[in-house]
Image (cartoon, rainbow, N blue to C red; front, top):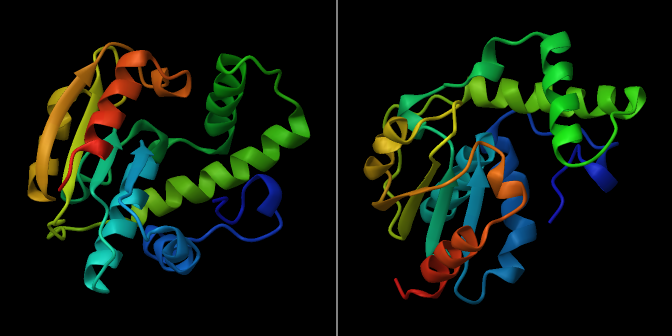
Length: 196
């Protein structure tokens, strides 16, 4: 599934809030949710994954078996993150670093386009204030990383208010998930294959 405002849907405006994003994704996702499923979200996308699950709960299902939230504080503990205080120039530096980390070379026009989407994502994160989060009937796996300086493992404790939560810390940094180590794949498979 490709959300609006990205890759082959770049001409479509990216949703301004996680609530809007979830509302737009659910009709597209529903035909694929006829079997056991789970969601994975890293950083701000963890909040988007949680919001999709919460809206599915409110609508009477289907319900994800597990929502895996990586490197993000719980909804009631945010908004949080260093990107929230960055201006466009600083976000551009960060995006260029991510492109290089993935083995690419930043191209100015494409970098500008990516930063436009990133800025929308950061604004959505800043707007996501949920003091009383929905408790999901499925499991929550709060995944942290030993060398993550953006969200430390001890900052993820609030996820226990969002469902039956298991906390796992894996070796690596904030972007280790982009080149998934075997232990991440093992944890995800265990969560998705364990019946609710």
